[in-house]
Length: 354
Image (cartoon, rainbow, N blue to C red; front, side):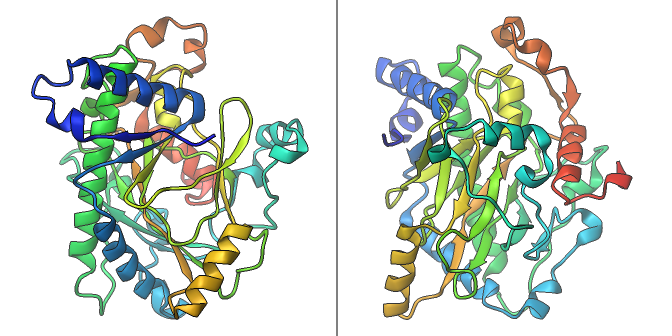
């Protein structure tokens, strides 16, 4: 099966704020896809394939620098929530989470994820997007950005692509809310001044380009919704709610949305955080061969953006989701406290700092 592609243009153009029948049907598609697959493909007329390419070009140039040069942008004392995270730092949750390991063992073999050998061999750059709150208990989750030297177009490129992706997420969040029978702004009102992060990953396929190499071990995202532009190298697998594994094919000009743990919390488990991994597959190898022929970069860059609920907002099941049988599994918790708990597990924040 393929994920549905939802064109956001009719919703953006609906003067009545999404009351038309076609728009309501699209909202139902959005909420159903997030519930059943944990993912969704969207086409946003404000986010072009050319915008995605410009972003990938700049970030490829950055990741092509030496490890020493990149480490100048490393900020471990800020839990890697700004600047660069070197390869070998992020630990796949499946390596440390006993419940997840049990879940993997119970899967049919054909749907089991690849087994990572250790920490992820990928680099990541964290760039904050959008305004931050003047007063917050969570200063380090809202830190100032780090700008690499020698890339004058860096800030404008990151800010431009980041704001376009946030705009797309906000529309999807409104559509999902309508589809779930909640007020249109149920999610977006909680996202205001959230610690949104544009977080492209860089994986060196020259060094780590053999089939089966795991760049991002089996995991879920701890944030609200994650959005990616199309990568030049495939390799993303997702798990549907029915347990089946699926390789994602993102058409040119489309964006991939994935549900994160904060959405799971707000819907009382109606939407589960989507499990996924990034692995070198046969399709990745074909893309590597093609890139070599054309003398293109062999860095696999993902244009990932993590949208968040505001750090000081409370995560709890909203509206009618508070009445569901599983609501008790999602007790009220401050979003910033929740994020810090999760970061400690995947090694981005020392446990002793909690």
